[in-house]
Amino acid sequence: MIAAATMLRGRIALNPAALALGFVLLCTVLPLLRHAHLPLVDLPNHIARLHLAATASDGPTAQYFRYAFALVPNSAADLLWQGLGHPTDVERFAGLVMASAALNLVLGTMVLARYLHGRWTLWSAGVGLVVYNMAFLFGFQNFVWSLPFGLYALMLWLHLEPRATWLRVAVFVPVALALYLAHFFAFAFFAVMVLGREVQTLIEARGRGFARRLALALPFLLPLGWLIVSTLRAPPAASGSFTSWLTLKGWLLRWRHLLLSPDAAPSDPINLLGLAATCLLGLLALRLFARSGPRLVLDARMRGAVIALAAVSVLAPQWLNGVALVDIRAPVLLLAAIFAATTWQGLSPRGGWLLAAVFAVLIAGRGLYFDRMAARYSADIEDMYSVAESLPAGARVLPLRAPGMENDRLFHHAQALLVARRDVYVPTLFQGVHALSLKPQWADHAHPALFSIDLRRALSPDDPDLPPIFLTGAVPEFARDWQRKYHYALLFDAHDPADPRLRPIARQGRMTLFAVHPGPGDRVAVMTPQARPAR
Image (cartoon, rainbow, N blue to C red):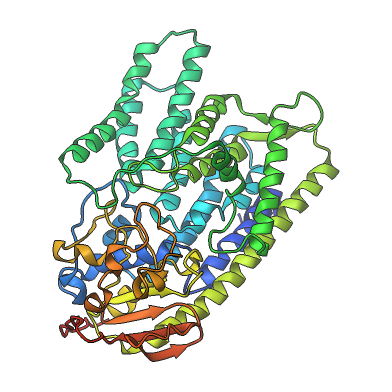
C-alpha cells in the first residue's frame, strides 16, 4: 500500500497537467490571497452590502439602509455569508470568495476537459489566461463565483443523457434553481449551452425525440416563471430598466477589452499583456477552422453548446434592464468551454512546448503585475483607513476626486470600504439588483450605481466644462446642496480644493478627509450620535 501511494504521488508530480494546474493557481490565486485589499472596481460595494447584511437592522447605518434577505437571482455571496454565519472579517471573506472563483474557473474547465477527453489535458490549463478577465477585474463577485458551476452542470447534463427523462428533470430542477439564485447570468448561460446541445442532438436524430426534449425544458421554465412573477410584482428597480446594444465599433472593442483591467491605464503592463493574450487567443481560435497542420479539434458533444454560447457572446447587449456590462460576461464562459472542449492535433512536441511557454509567460506576467497593483492599492486603502480613524459612526461622507480623475476606476467605489470599517454612510452603494435598499427619506442623498465624483460637480456645479455623467447629467442629485447632506468629504487625490467649506482634518498619502463647514446661509447637516457595535 505504501509503495502504491508512493507511485501515485510520483505520477501526480510528473503529470504535466497537474504541474500546469499548480503553476496557474500559483499565478492567479496566490495574488488574491496575499493582499488584504483587492483592486477590483465594484468589490468594495459588495463588501459594504455584506457588512450591512450583518448590521443594518441595529447598527449605526440602520437609519439609512434596509437589508431584507430575499432569494433574488444575484445572491451567491449573500447566501454564503449568511449561511456560514458571518465566519470572518467581511473584507477577508470577500477576498476568499474571489480567490475561490478564480480557482474554480480553472478546476471547472479542467474537470470538464477530463470528462470529455477521458484524460487530464495540459491545454485546458490554458484557461488560466482568462482568469483575470474584465468581469473579474470589475469585481462582479456573484457572477464570477457562480459562473464555473455552469461548466460542472453541463458535464452532469452530458453524463445523464442516456438516462430516463424523468430522472434528468428531477436532477436539474434543483440545479437550475441553485444557479438562478447564485446569479441570473450563470443560469442563463447554462440554459443557452443546454439549448445548443439539445438542438444539436435533435438535428443529429433528424427530429426524433422532440417531445422528450420539450419535457427537458421544465427545469429552466421554473426559474423563468419565478423571474417573471417577481418582476411583475416588484416596484420599479432603483437601478432603472435601461437597455442598449453596442455599435459595431463598440462590439469590436469589447473583444479587445476582454482581458484588460479597468483599473489600469492602457499602457500598464497588465493591460499590454492582456492585449497580447487576446491577440494570441484570436489567432489560436482560427485553428478551429483549419483542415491541415496544427489545429484545434472540438469534441463533437460540445459543438452545439459552443455555437449557442458564441451566438450569445456576439448578440448580448451592453446594458440589460439596468444592468451594465452584460456584453463582457458570456465570452468568459465561451473561452472556458473552448479550452475544455478542444484538443490539439498535428501539433509537434516542439510547437506544444513553445505554446506552453508563451502561455506561461503571459499568465505569470499578468499575475505578477496584478500582485503589484494589489500591493499599491492596499497601501492606499490603509492610508484611507488612517485618515478615517476619527469618523464617528453614522456620519455621512461625500467621496470626491480631483479634476480629471473621475474616470480613474481604481477608487470608483473604495469609499464603500468605510461602511464596513467605520459604519458610515456613503451615497454610492448599489441598489436595485441586490437585497439592499435605501430608506425613502434618503433618496436624494444617493445614486444606485454611481461612483466618487469630480469635486467640481459639488463645489462648482455651474462649471460649463463639466461633462455629463451617463444617464445622470452634470450634477447628480446626491451632490446638490451637499453642505446640508454630508458631515465629511473624502478626497482620493493629492489636490487642494481651496474651498472654505472643506476644512482638512487628516491627510495621509493621496487621501485627505475634510470636515464640511457650511457657508453663511447654508443649512447644516445634523450629526446624530451613534454607537458603533462591538467587533
